[in-house]
Image (cartoon, rainbow, N blue to C red; front, side):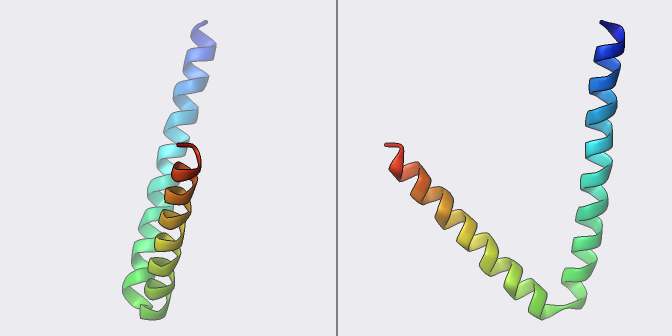
Amino acid sequence: MYKQTMGFVKGIGTGMVAGIAVASIGNRMMKDNKHLKRNANKAMHAVGSLLDNVEVMFR
């Protein structure tokens, strides 16, 4: 049981470190490149619209 729990905790820790690294690199790229920032904003809005449509379909 202890090994399973520690494996789970290590997995969560690894995921958090990877997420922080990706966010840091992405943040630096967004500051340097206005075109990338605009495209990322459009993509975020498209994903938000998609999720809204899926939500409406399940009602």
